[in-house]
Image (cartoon, rainbow, N blue to C red; front, side, top):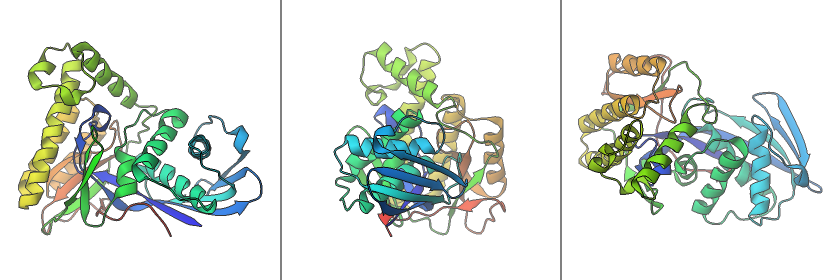
Length: 338
């Protein structure tokens, strides 16, 4: 039994998912593969092929541990907690998503582990939105990153040649054709690794929650710009980013429907400026990577993922040659058994 889950690129809508907002991600071809073989009893033997590292444990021994093993143990524990009757398994994990790149290698790992464990146990996965919530709990409770559902939903629900407009208040997912008219979407490594659990990601999430407390609302989706301006710093800046980023998602969907790629590029630039100046998750290395893409012919570029390092995304004009170390990303299908 072999499961594959893709990473994702997020066209626009950053740090909006845990604020009940909007985002426009798409699954990519790079991802994580988990091969599973049945074992008698309730034992898990896992090997991370890329790291040449191993782990083994029984169901009742699953506890928080550092590194990649936390994902394996968390997947087993959360599936059992959800009522799935798993069987023991030998797992071989390999991947083609750069770790710490903002392309959601973590969600790809969570999703592929769950699909492989369910598949080798002869179980059906059920509703994929519910499975995305389960995978998010792995990252939150076992890995320590307070992520939203963006990455997991994009990995599970991705479609070929489409982005997904996700409303995180209703969890409504709407496919949006991503017709680029000869343009290319590429990512470029800033050279600076990031780790959501260890970076300022959790701090930004806490600041958004505090902004809601100060305004007496459940999420920043309910807040207007005049409301945000009443807040003290840095909460006003955090709220301002979320409010304007939601609007940029609306405008990007409209621009794609009109096939106005110049407008999409301008919105990517505006998103990066807001992430840099209002949300303060960019770095000198990330800004330099954005500049490299613009010099190469990008009509818009921005950081992707949680920030504090990782990759940037650029929309290159037709005929523009991306930097040699850039990776073209195209929307592909979601997670599946192979």
